[in-house]
Length: 195
Ligand SMILES: [Zn+2]
Image (cartoon, rainbow, N blue to C red; front, side, top):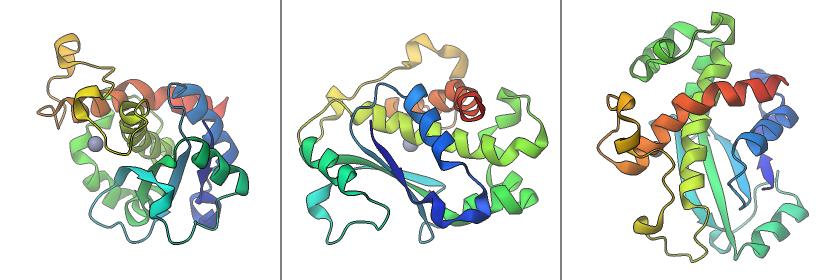
C-alpha cells in the first residue's frame, strides 16, 4: 500500500508523517490499494470520514500527490481509499483538551486504554484512524467501481466479539467491525508509531 497525506501542511500537530505511514503500513497490511489521508478544514460535523473514491472524479489532484502515487492509483483501476480527518476536532485533541474530552466522551477510550494523559492527542488520532482504516480494509478487495456490501470483508463479527456488544454503532456490521478495530488496533498503531 502506498500512503500519501497532507499532514505536513499542518505543523501545529507535530505529527511525524514518516512514522505514521510506517505504522499504518505495518498494522493494516491487508490494505493494498493506495491510501490518501487528508486533514480537512471543511469537515466540521464528523471526526473523520472514509470514502472509497476514484481518481477519474477529480478535476485536479491534491498538491501532496506525487506522480508515483497517481500511477499507483491508475494501476488499481483508478480506485483509492480516502480518509478525511476533521481539522477542528483534531485541533481540539492537540490544543484544547477539555473540549476534546467532551467531543470524545462516548468513545470511552479510558475504559479501553491506560495511557499517560500527555499522549491523549495520539490516542485520539490512532483511535479515529483505526476506525477509518478498518473501513478501507472492508472495501479493499473489490475491484469494481460499484461496491457490494455483501462482499465486504469483516474481521470482527459480533457473534465472535460479544464482549464489545456495547460499542456505539453495534447495529451495523461494518460499523461494529470498525469500532472493534479502534479498540484492538489503537495501541498497536501507537506502538508502531514510536518504534
Ligand atoms: Zn464508521
